[in-house]
Length: 444
Image (cartoon, rainbow, N blue to C red; front, side, top):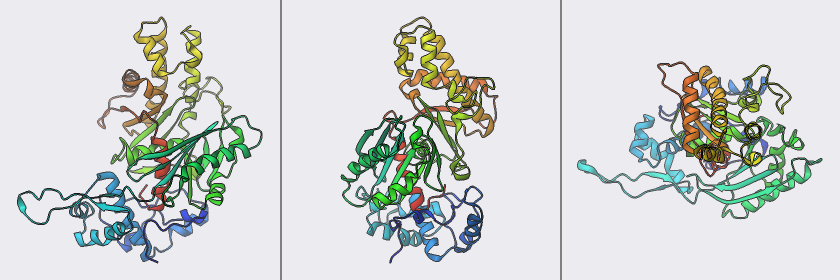
């Protein structure tokens, strides 16, 4: 059978891929020797099993698959690109690029665009390569306490066949919650014109990425311990990739949003809960079994309020909608139990007494955790999602100002805050990106 990026196995073994590589898409194509000798210090595997795999040889088929993944990753970063430009970017000749991309054209993954102007040098006009709108899509799923959303996501980031289901976060058994998840995905799959590449699930809680299971969801305890990945694989016969919601959100920014082509940045989610994820020097940081990235539960007040996780002083205790609504009640702002960043900004602009003080404290509280990240790993770029986005430019600029006040000046540049997708498609796109990254052996 001809090797290609669309040949996956619908089983938990589908993601036992060759180790991720630390080289970026702009470098030379991997040689067999590089693949055979290169070790990935950023991968968190499972003990002796990972140690054995990291020293095993890479087959010629895996070399071809890795180089295909590299070219596809370059197209995600660069957009429509000619063969000649891809060859220059990869440091190989055009014939090598043609040998990689021609099967992808025949499989319907890539198409050739309209010829570009030839310029003054003559010769055959270049035709840029781009992703086909008819390539197999990916099911992206966002699972939060009490609600699940699903959609089909194209390789260009188009989000269609969106569906939503609700379930009670206070259920005593998990079956009704799984039924809601299954029904939501089934409706999305019904709109697919060909078998999807897989299912990516972004979970609003702690996850074990190696086992594809949910570890804990504080706001919906019935989901804790649920082996959701294997359950969905058994039900739908497709590869399933499950990860923490903020990491999926970051991948949405990385492949389809403001983080495209950026080597280091952080994604921060704000709202009822607080979370984040980090891309550092091109690598998505997960930690062992996906344990890293619980930014909402980093400590900002040693003797602070008790968090829903049972510990004191978590960043989440001072920078979520729960904190904002308590402060709004104390300040006697109108309708405090439903206030969000958008309404808070409106109250400030209307000159409502007490609103400006609550606004400034909320912005500073959000900035405190970001400043700690900047002091620790300095990604410099922070893409904020969720509640902050509805606060618009006033909220964005206030957070950025506080972060810069909290962080000493450094030659590496000042931290920058940018707003994420107002439609919150980043998580669905990123959930699809989990599957693309795994199945196509992208370098993460």
